[in-house]
Length: 171
Image (cartoon, rainbow, N blue to C red; front, side, top):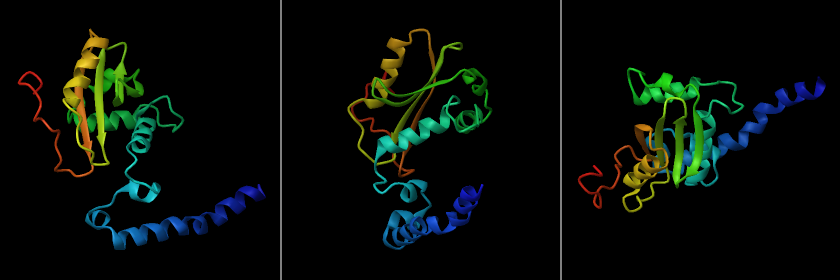
């Protein structure tokens, strides 16, 4: 019991280095000054896309040990679909990292549904026909599935998928 009390008591002082680092970043980084970004605080190299995808995948996966069940995934889906009509389709969701090079693939076996998530939090350029290839991968490997959404998450909210090499069918 005493050990736990010491941990709780010392917690604020253990946060000081993180707060100090954030303050320094805030003073020296234009992007942090523009708007808050959690990844600037928790990652020494914030551009690590896989690190960010791991965190998002953990939070979205109902089977992970965050004790939120489907609530975080439902919130994410509700954000995508304002009426939240597809949220109930993912009650048995399986969240997979890097399947077919897709950053995060959310799928429901029982409803034959999928959501593709592409993380561009490091502001990387798109690979050739990246999103259409992901769509093709899911369509080919999960023939009976409906793709409910393709989510593109850039660092800069103005960044959009590069469609220069897409065909009319890709669009």
